Image (cartoon, rainbow, N blue to C red; front, side, top):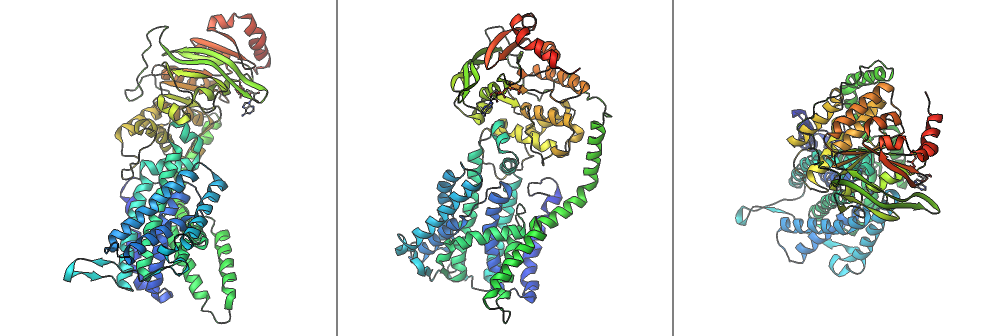
Length: 624
Ligand SMILES: Nc1ncnc2c1ncn2[C@@H]1O[C@H](COP(=O)(O)OP(=O)(O)OP(=O)(O)O)[C@@H](O)[C@H]1O
């Protein structure tokens, strides 16, 4: 089970389990060497870990700079209280948390445009810069190397009814209540449309952008959420210790968070908490072993290696994986058996719907030759000296099926990429219903109404068919960015209805809960088309939709394309010319990047130049 799962009463089991764990911990764990203070400290790490797990576990962005936000939250809170600017610890905590979030917005804005190691390096650099700033230019406010002593504890109530939350059990209870609230919120975020899109970004970032989601903005959202959690944890640290230490900003803090999350299990939310418990317990108890002296660090390192090698998914990750495998094994085996049957040729030919469903996108108005849906205006793309596409112009009539054909390397895929603005043209532009889309980027172009099904499948392999389609359908319904963190991803009835209609159309309804990677090849191709269709496009680009299909699958897919053509304009690249001549109203022929011909199927069939350059050659090479 990933943390993105949703639906049903069972989904509240994790919250209940956490509640029981938080209540039982101060009773049971002191017998195992956990003091109440250690448990409180573990909760503090767990709190920063909740946000970090959304960033790292869910989206896959490894930050080595979380200490910066932990420190900002902590020092802003501590300074406001100790300087007397604020007397309410709660208000100071809110100010510290918001400051960390604002700092996260700035750092994240710069960092999320980079991926992999570059992202990590930027966060690391900002973390180190924050440490330096705390220690030097701002030492008047932060106390530099001395930190800020005398941070007051929170007070509940007013006047004579006020209760100071002192050290020991009361402080643990405060941290436990805050952690529980933060955990419930984090789970809601994970199960929200935003959470679903963040998980999809980790699976296949390019496809999420191609569907119309603003990927950098969603990553930034995750980054700020992580910074807010870190800021809150930092603010609480000062009150817990009555002292805000400068090492909150240190690289060791960021590193320890990463280690604890890996040990506990990323993408589980509770993993960083469990990792912190194991890590801090080992650290505290190893130091007490007589004769171990400074060797305890070596032993701790060996323990880390053993844990990581032995439990690849981390402690919680392995437990959840084992449990999920047990629960879903029979369903998975049944799905794999269906796939084997289909691939062995034993499946019944898909009974594709001929009825247009009311929830599918409505047809574009096709009112005559002047009604042009898409226009390529002198499009060119050069790679150094190679002219992959060289000044190609053509018009696609609204409501038609328009084919682009040409031999291998003619520039068809490059042309498609420019139509969706995945690749910027060297010169020329694209008009959609008379408005220029070129230059807006792939997400905006998808939002304008152009969708593409790719030559090579671009699915979210570990997500079910329904979830794949949901990511696509959410793009058009919610626009490029919406931060609806508190609703569940499957709570939009119109989106679910659209998914059901598309699954019925694609004959994938029985595979709704099957992960995409288990599907048979032909089913994956249909899902690829379905994802483009789920964005309710005005113009659908199909790049070699029949590639690799059996004759019966080709026939079924051609019928599907005709069905889809009732709802939107289609531009199709395909090498199966029999299919193309049967489907397309108009055909554009490319040869070595240039436009060779453009006309009706009959005109193209009778064109001698096309015969010489492509049709003759292709039929000569075509397998029987
Ligand atoms: N990113 C790139 N960098 C350099 N050359 C490229 C790039 N993308 C495509 N090309 C080249 O541009 C030319 C056109 O490629 P493209 O994939 O668009 O052709 P195609 O008509 O789609 O071929 P196919 O039918 O085999 O898919 C080819 O020579 C290809 O090697």
